[in-house]
Image 1 (cartoon, helix red, strand yellow):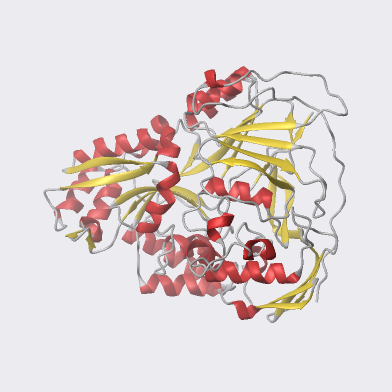
Image 2 (cartoon, rainbow, N blue to C red):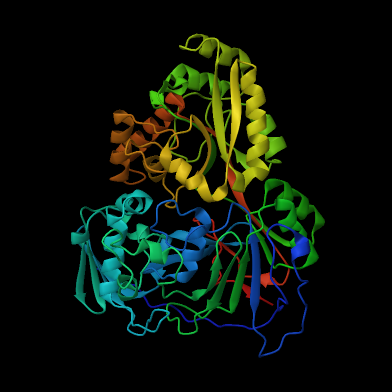
Length: 556
């Protein structure tokens, strides 16, 4: 058995700018009041103002179907988990989470009985934002909810062999146990991702109905957490305001006292707000802005390759879509499209070279377990036409390509390049622009023949990525709706094994090989997560979920 140490205490600091006003409109710098630069005083409220690309939180309930990635960020700061990941310093000197090291959060310690259980001792001084003490009953209700609501939350819990309420046991008010279905390398780290958040069960139970037994309609717009920040106001599509929860006990009290997150859809307007000094952080920069803002040398900019992540073109493999035969069910069509991709143009024109290439491998045979690793496909129009000629659609066809408007800075020019290139082999493509708030729902539907996907696996293993992106359970991020029993068996074998073991190494190489041969999705790049900050902002840390952790940030 092993017992984890308690959190080390930290020191808080107070300083920085005070924001005189927040965005009144949506999308125009003229709708702001200039931020006032003031001298630091001991009584001054420390306010952090943020704009971000990739959309705006569409829900505060991470268990709700269709909650988007920005919603993970608000949840990460509003709610605690039993434990979290430690911090490491990256080669460039920036901070990153360390998925090899876990540390306490709401649980102050835990004991593991190998292959049987993990028993957590909860902090006795932790409370929710309404003052109610956090107990093991809240933890069980929250875990029961996650494995029962279906969709992404239930898939995520299952990835760590957390599958049914019977696994979650209340020993006493401050002791909670997870019974293990099997010895699984992902179980412990899966407890530190956003999904197993701890909800104020007694508060939410006041809002449940027969049709909504988990209170999802209420949590969608309300705060039921006990994290480092609590909800001040939430205006979907406009503004989210969080204030520091001064009674938070699960770590060092944050220096930031108020966070104002503004919805500014246009990249140019987000950049203008940063350049005027009206905001502290422009988060999740477009590749164009990353390149150009670096050249100014006026801002603190961090670009981190996103672990276990790909931008890809997913080709729906269902035999029929909307009652018609689907060309992409034909592997020869998929291979033709893979050879027709304008890879270099996409990399340099749409992405400004701010990414890691994932195409043009020298060998067509997979001989290692590195992930992501480049596919063997490269632009070869002759091979594309030859492959299409061997398909059931030798003369081409008409189709659509959907992309997320929340990422239009790179996705739209990328799609235009694809549209032009596929026209050369007789495939006429119409572009579908999906609003960022709706894109997750479109992924869930699996109704589009082609879709630009941007999936990053939270747990940094290739088998975890493939579990979500290629497994026949058809999870949300399997944008191809790809199903192959041989692939499934290989993924499941790897999930139950560990790197370095023969069955793991063999399974991983084989399922990557199938991915290249069957090509249900076409990898383009491994993206960077880039952030531009005013130079008085410190403490930024990269996280696997690609959202800001306000707890670590400081204004100096």
